[in-house]
Amino acid sequence: MVIKSVTITNKSGIHARPASLFIKIAANFKSNITIENGNNKGNAKSLISLLSLAIACGSEVTITADGPDENEAIDALVKLIESKFGEE
Image (cartoon, rainbow, N blue to C red; front, side, top):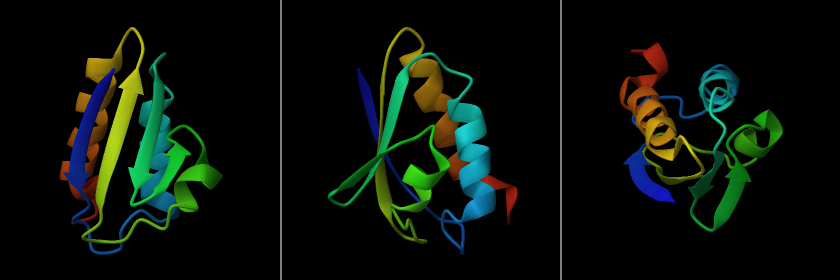
């Protein structure tokens, strides 16, 4: 299991477009992936689950991956977040 925390820095947080990108990348991995915002946790491969977390700019999220490609999954998702989802 790999766990990493990262801060959301794109101005609009995770709304529909960034959530779709996040899910598209997460779906490429066999590992179970969750994302946590505060006390709320959701499936990183589910649009509704991800949007229900209401992740805003400045939020620190924790991504957990557990499975055969967990390191690659975490690296790819953190890279996406650090790129500000290509919005800026």
